Length: 287
Image 1 (cartoon, rainbow, N blue to C red):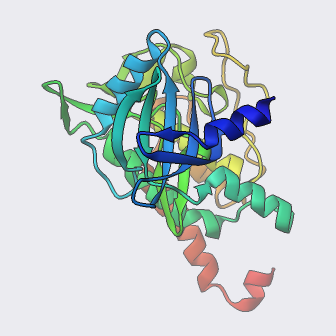
Image 2 (image 1 turned 180 degrees about the horizontal axis):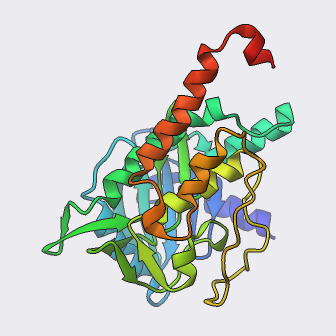
């Protein structure tokens, strides 16, 4: 029955866009590979217009739409149809989550520092761009925290990484603010569990994402839902090489202001490790 429904929906036209393949699904919507009226392949995201959900998506779209950046997924079109919001976006090859699963399945190992270094540098540029309090939205100069940085929200376009899914994006006008807990608990910073948000919240999630892609998450006790009495323990960074550990440990500091000033600075230190290894002789590399 479910397969029949999926096939029927995949043959449906949405304002001239033909759905070809389901790429992903969430609590309120789905992402399809689709064909535009001119034959171009695109990603088409549909979001159910449940009370509060559609307006929330529209508000966040209006926040992020003016923030054009080479490493942010481009949204070309938005409309409402059949009680759903429809977003047309550029189509990715997959996500970093997909890439990690392929590496594990085909080679039996997680992604290497060398592989991740350039991808994370690009993701860092996108996050530093939106996080900086230099965007004038609604008459206020604010930064934007993505609030759901994780491997599945970092999309791969060949050699390029782009940040997607701004459904939880939040404007902040100071370095720390009170805010309802939201996002994916496994990647969330300590301040999120306490009902807060900071200039460095996305950096923390990016560091957890790095750990996950290098082998596993750094915390094994994360509750499935946010609760204020949960306290993040010291991260277990044994999935990382010794040279990586202090870099990521700083990004995972419990106090937000003790983390790196920017995501790019964290990634520059990781890049230095890659360069040092590249400069090492053949014997050192083998060892």
